[in-house]
Amino acid sequence: MKSLCCSVSSLALLVALAAPASAAPTVDGTVDGSYGAPLAVQTVQTNFGDSTGGVTGGGELDAAYATVSGDRLYVMITGNIENNFNKLSLFIDSKAGGENTLSGGPSYDGGVSSNFAGLTFDTGFEADYHVFGRWGGAFEVDVVDRAGGACTNDCLGDFGAATVGAGTAVQSGTVLGDGNGTTSFLSSPAEFGFNNNNAAGVGGGTGAVVGDPASVTTGFEFSIALADIGSPVVGSEILIHAAYGNGDNNFHSNQILGGLAAPQDNLGGDGGGNFTGNLGGIDFNQFAGAQYFSVTVVPEPGALMIAMLAVCGFVARRRA
Image 1 (tube, one colour):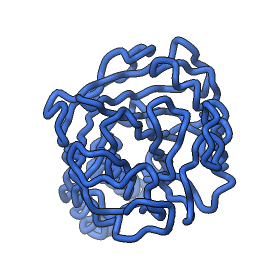
Image 2 (tube, rainbow, N blue to C red):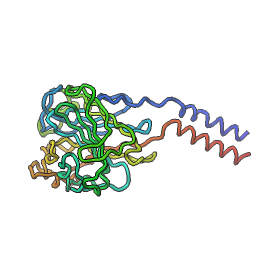
Image 3 (spheres, one colour):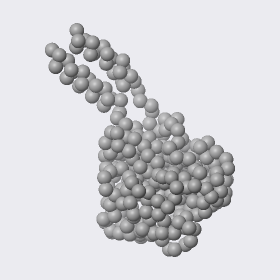
Image 4 (cartoon, one colour):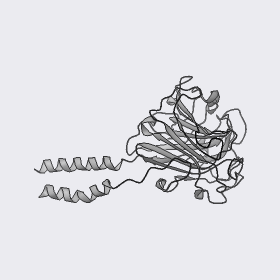
């Protein structure tokens, strides 16, 4: 009778766990409802040009979303990326180790990756992977394993260019294959979508946000297998830092997620807006708040159901 009670008391939970999970986002550069609320929202106007959408100039990072589904990480950064090879950089902290202060050793992206040398993240953030996107025609994305700063000319990394909509304001493609100075390591293609049609969100300048950046629904979207970013375990936090800067990685804008406190001019290479030839003078500990956001790795419903059945089976055997 007690074993039966165990089964009955667990039935409602098992039914709930067996219910279909929310659908994984469609990677097309548009926010899906499955992301939920934004994990970070921009706090300062953009001083890299306020875009009016399409293939016009200007760049901004309005809000950040992330979720884990089907053993993949999905990230959505709403806003705009100018079609002049300016870059959106996502640094991902998803396993032990990594770099709190970036080294100049890893050489990729035509060698301009070395210009990150000396950039320091908030305490507790240690970058493992670098994902960056840019366009001047077809949108291009690289994924690089920085190996804790230990790789030099032998970093692992993959590259992909848009195969749908190349050169237009709405593009998509996959990432798989050797990159610029890197050797492929992905076990399955990473996916990306880009939609540059946003004309809302933040305005231009250095002051506090005027408008509603959380209302923006288009931008850069990316998905990668958890197995390719260190296989973070259930319950762990994946930390992500997003930054917008120039193509040579030596001048950062004021568009960072998590956001900077207003008023805030472009960071430049020293955090004060000056051009120094690299980003080594930027230390995010000098700015209020956390310049990153996080998402928790959650188990798939099927895995939870199997675990609960195993527990009930164990209890039944103990009571028999």
